[in-house]
Structures are given as structure tokens and as C-alpha cells.
Amino acid sequence: MTLTATVPTTYGSRYIQQLCKHWSHKFETNFDPNQGEISFPMGPIRLEANPQALVVVLEPNADADVERFKQVVADHLDRFAFREAPLPFDWK
Image 1: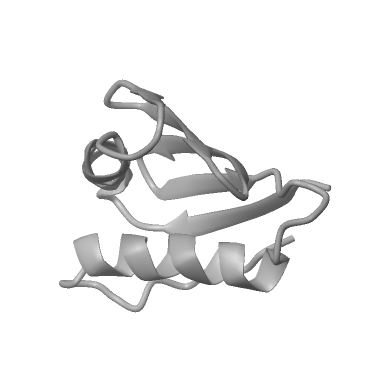
Image 2: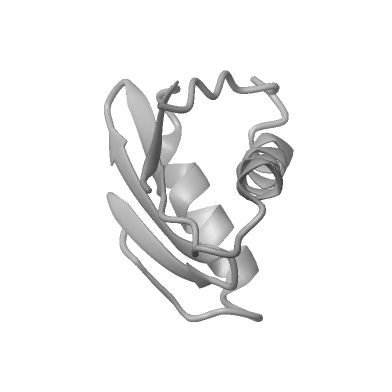
């Protein structure tokens, strides 16, 4: 299963870097200004910034609590996006 949310924001690059740096203390991360990947315990998180949106892709492990996974990622991104939070996550 793969879940994708396209979050409208012009600050996607900033949020990728902040989230990856934040979680790099606990998890393996790989990122640049336009994309990032986090080896999260519930499954990998992939992030991609474009000029109008931040695309967030979650690949939950078979035993992951999917709703909790989505909430943890959204809560952390909202923390960094406090000026425009809450960000709209329309998971598909």
C-alpha cells in the first residue's frame, strides 16, 4: 500500500529539509532541497517539493497503524509550517 498527499505550499523545500534534519537524529535520512527520504519505523517516507506543493508518500509496513502514521507525519509537518498550519493532507 502506498499513500500520497499533495499538500499545497510554496515552502515544500524548507519543510523537507526541516523534517529530515529533525528526524536524522533518530532515523536514517537522505535529502536535498527538492526531495527527501526517511527510513521511519512504520515504513519509508518520501518527500518531493515542487513550486506549488509538497508531495508526501508513505509506504506503511504490513503491521503499521496507518492512521497513526499519517497523523505523526502531518503533525510534524504542521509544526514546521506553523505560519500556514494546519496543512491540508488529502491522502489517496
